[in-house]
Image (tube, rainbow, N blue to C red; front, side, top):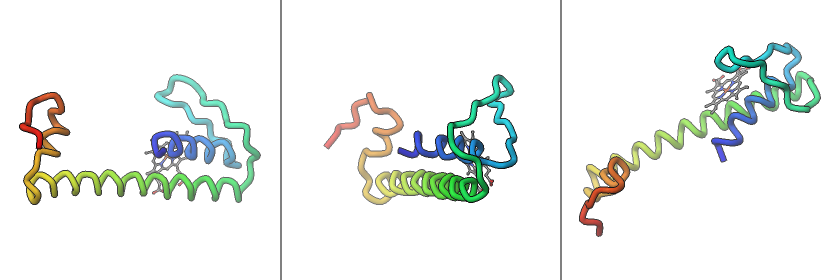
Length: 93
Ligand code: HEM
């Protein structure tokens, strides 16, 4: 969901921007704009959507990190070691 919606909202925000600054990923090519109408309110909307999606994603990564540490140090199970080396035998419960 984030992996698709987050970059798409970024692409939408530069597409509707009145600034018309071209995006040139890795200096390789000019990204075409999405077929959306340019306006200041549309730019505000997509900028907010991009902001919320980006920070929600960062929050989920932090939560996942904390949960992995909780499993390892508090619950003392094999969840973290299975994430690090999924194929090894961890004497799974
Ligand atoms: C996985 C992909 C992406 C991530 C994780 C990401 C994350 C972010 C974050 C964290 C910000 C700063 C928000 C803030 O604190 O103000 C930002 C801003 C921005 N991003 Fe992205 N972004 C992604 C993809 C894209 C793409 C594909 C585009 C456009 C082609 C884009 C265009 C922008 C622009 C123009 C801003 C500045 C918005 C403003 O403040 O006016 N992003 N992005």
